[in-house]
Length: 219
Length: 225
Image (cartoon, rainbow over all chains, first blue to last red; front, side, top):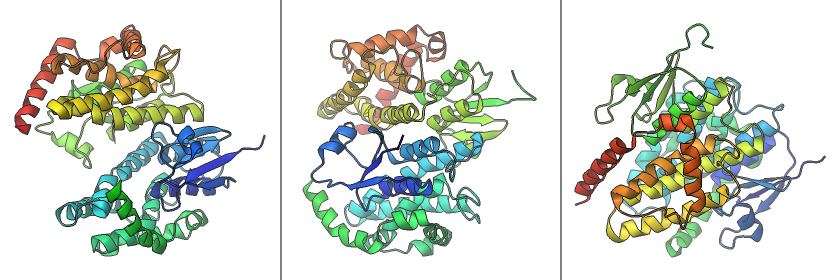
């Protein structure tokens, strides 16, 4: 039986990138269907009726929602190639913990990018930098968060890298100055095919921001 | 069943749904553990050392090694002690279970907190929003004894937050957030849960719990005044 894998996604999405990378890591052929988030498709609404959000992974007609859940699903369904989660239960728990931590960076980033200029934006930036520093400390001198192997936590975080230029521009700061090891790590990750293929173009993301800001004000 | 010395310790809090769900899982697996009640207002050195990132309970210590975040702990317990599985085996069913667990914690819990924490119009809005979310849970229960299907599973354990925390606040808040006419399946599910020995054993005693919720609500009200 040939697997039918479809990904409903939006090109700049930090979350969609995670799923794309996981699929590429496993060499899975999939149909990428770009979604218009201002005009949600019937398929998207049918496949994610609860949240109506991307990314949605559809495997043989069955939808899986939420990017980190998709990454685990991909790892469990195609276990042989390039394992994403460690096999040891304690290491897995640590990976899941950091994955969950990375998702908690979102509110801070929201304030930084879309918040009121001044206090709210500054608060968002501070929150983001603090959390990124914790991740940097966790990474230490390792090649990847998983050690020598690229894995779950790397995938969870690298999606944000496509937005780093935008964060720096709108937050008026340098991520490399704050967290040099994170930038070094990101550059290592980008050398991987799966990541290079999946990350959005940073410049295009930054160019998109004013448009997104306008939509958020109206919406 | 213990090999060498399997030391399992839980840093928890008696009234926390996140702490209690770990106790349910450990009890379902028949695992002996040491419970250490934590004072959230005055965090112990052990707690701060075991969860330096969030400084929150619950934290599971297995042979001294800490695991934090209740959903991560539940999966760790299932991965480590593989009898009486809590999560489904099939990857797709697992993904669905994980989705609903997150839904309870990230959507229902967050919205339901506002029911207790707010007053007047803001509270009414929170009640409406919570009901909208619960309608999705209601749909999931049609034709099933438990959210996990025929027997208690991961989502049921996580959703005890709804059955024994959210629904208990109704008495204190004086608002029927989950009326039986609107949510017959949820009410039926709560009855099914109460028939399970492990659940009865592991949820906070009702009277003490209601007093606790009352006291917390009063202190929140004082803060917002």
